[in-house]
Image (cartoon, rainbow, N blue to C red):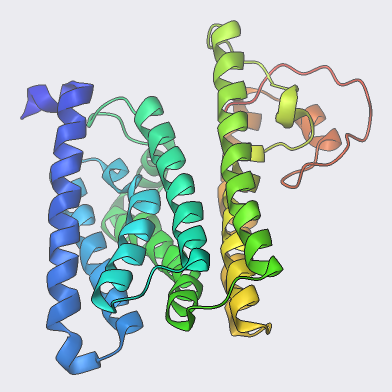
Amino acid sequence: MKNLMKNKLGSLFLIFVMYIFAVSIGAVVYFASASLLNNPIWQMLLADIAGTFVIWGLGLLFRNASTYDPYWSIIPPVMLLGWTLVLKIQLTFPIALLFLGILVWAVRLTYNWVINWKDLEYQDWRYSMIKKNNPKIWFLSNLFGINLMPTIIVFIQMIGAYKFLVASPSFNILILLGFVMTLGAALIQFIADKQMLAFRMEHNEKKSCINEGLWKYSRHPNYFGEVLVWWGVWMMYFGASGKIDFMVISPILMTALFLFISIPMMEKKIIQSRPEYLEYKRHVSVLVPFFVKRESIETKNQTD
């Protein structure tokens, strides 16, 4: 087992088995709760939480909270497929667009995780920092902060997708716009990650701040792409419902997660080791790509 954990392919195999097990447990919970709840949204929420507990528990077993990282992108299309099959949703053109948009995003994000992930002995620095700062409550911060909170936030995004499925809407310009937003968001993430990887290779992993390509107009274009995906999904829901209701809270919540948690944590780490990042920060938009406040900026580092 230890040899597998030290080997990337072996570790990926273990992750694959973990997720098959987690999805299977989730499916059992979904159907087992049908008689009690008789509500596909609440049933899927319980299934989602059950799957999260499985991954969290296995993460404790392997002493690595990063076992949860691919959950963010793997589970949404699984949920979408599950609802479609169980409810016998007819595959219309608008529903096909929803599937395609989420699937492209999921495949790209999961692929990027595979490329950058090392093995089961590697844990995200943020998780290690949380554990180091508060070791006594690591059990709880790992469960609620690293695992359950993202699960709930992503699930809230998927409620709009569920309502889109059951509404089986006719095609309209807003649905097309939402689809284009999801594809564009995935493309932005792909380009941003590719530019960052090329920058790191060019600088031989030396600490320096990227100020080229998309990174010249946004400090976190990859995060912008992630947020834009969920605004695109909401736009498709808006096109189906024709009204702005409480579901608008879903992309707002996702935006807040990045603006007030992910980005501040990332930038705090960057500034500690590269104070020159402060200059870059003064002139470049935090999330939404925008023109720089000054044309010439000497930069030397950023690693996202």
